[in-house]
Length: 412
Image 1 (tube, rainbow, N blue to C red):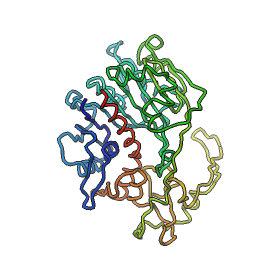
Image 2 (image 1 turned 180 degrees about the horizontal axis):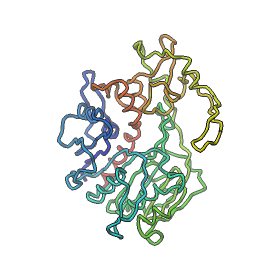
Image 3 (image 1 turned 60 degrees about the vertical axis):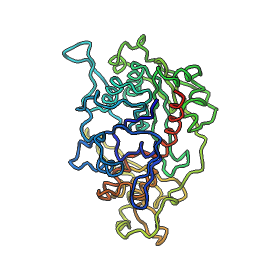
Image 4 (image 1 turned 45 degrees about the vertical axis):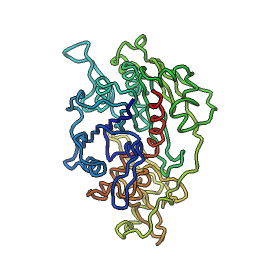
């Protein structure tokens, strides 16, 4: 089996950076280990004319007709090259489905929900392996029908012949410099040797010892409580039935085989973390120092505010205080796309040279996600560079998973 990859919602190439241990030379040349061949990638930002992420991808990985910058929903899925691994980080959206008006047996998802594009590609191309990333709230959404969205996804994958492992991973637990929690989803088709190898193990052994996440992101073998969910056709006849009726509590680690899912809240065997202080630059430009100290002191401090809801209900909004400035002996908090703007979530650090308070720099934001220094310095503004990193993943996680997937493919 060839080690070929299709990267969806590619952003600035986080999965590729991880899978191929990408570095930048001093002259800005991309140095890519040939672990995987990325045969096709798609990146498109619908809300803006500028396509900074795609331009960065092209700049770092070269101009290619297999790097596409168009709406994925308009692409003929048959035109996508065959591949052994499909990867992508996609947004947490409303995955509910309904029957079509014209055909009672037809099923449609909400327009613009990107999961259905993944589903269509999997249906047409059937890659042996799939690795996806999402925010951890996916396992619990929506609030009025807990677990429905993830249940819909699992049923989709089951219908297509995949088993699924998942794990919520906090990057800081495994030695990285950012407390970034994301759910990673690994699916493998029943036609693979890996599938046949895994189904000979108990669900508990897959979650705790034998599965891809258990081997690369170790957890303590001390979980006694498991939760089960059954999404087989015998229980829910189709996706609409799952969407209308399914509700369950999915825990942080899990496995689904032949429509039956088991999950548990696992405890990571943590590695010594990298700290925010360890990624800071020296000799930082003046433009990164903050001027409005009083505003940040207010935003970061505890507060109780009288408010009135749209229904006229009076209530008190309260929030606790945050470290100000951010502690340099701990991993950074989760970066958001609004990093470096004047808001509560922005990191403020004490500069190592001057002891003055400042924002983190674009290079520091890249380091928090394990990208090479200056990766996004491709012509976009600082604001856009922060935005890219707020949307990105910690590339060290797909790097570890990519090495294991490479070993799995070697045995196919």
